[in-house]
Length: 364
Ligand code: SF4
Image (cartoon, rainbow, N blue to C red; front, side, top):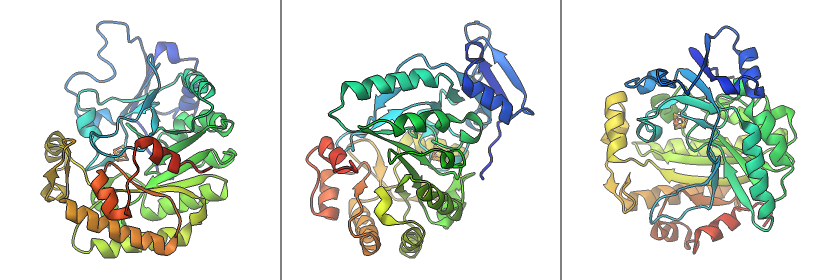
């Protein structure tokens, strides 16, 4: 299993008695640990000003989350959105993909942080789901972190999976580039939890997805989860264009469907490399040699840079053909793409985000 160990752990003093903290201390007894009082003026935790992003990823800060945990996914202006909710149980990620948008998004708040008050999170989610029983919710935990990379130490899924397994109107998605699934295999998700992987050819993983699980490790973990009763999801995102990309992505699709049963896949998504001028600046500083910086991209109405539209359409159409050859009716959507691109790829576009959200409800 992929191993990440923080170099230091900081625990806010009012989190000391929480179950997550006991698990963390038991799993990492050799890692230096400090109890901190965030209310004290002179304390400059989680990271002192000026700490670089790389250093911040190595120090784990355990805090109590004070606001709301559940938020509607912000999506992207002018793009079709998939009506998704996010639970931010942690912030930042110890893996280090060259294209990771957190380099820009968390530039001024880069601490690797987990929130220990999971009971508050579950109470909030329970209230929302109970109040709106007629609606179906897709909820994810991997928006500003990876859903599973810290799980061997914090045991987050031990608390959330049994809770979501009992919810009649929600599906929890755990999105990852790791293979940290050991704890998941001990719990029955009762068809209510989707474990999903971001997928790229091994060549892209080697070049751009530093510290993540290999393609084979991701596939093996997916196979284990499927056998344990989990639904699966796969995100071909970000798809990268390079000479020979077709050969690699077609082989990736074949390898995927040779490993898992497509009938138990809840959804697949596709999206191409997205950038912003700010993210490019961060990449230039942190990963000056990445070839992604040389990609030809154009600005879109949502302020993001993407490949030219005809190239995107061609990439999606080819992927769709390879996927459909193996999985004729699997649900597929585009991530952060315009109505026009949807129409060119699928021949239709969902009229609104609710329609797309409903299409992804596995019970429909
Ligand atoms: S795994 Fe995801 S969150 Fe972590 S560095 Fe890569 S893109 Fe960012």
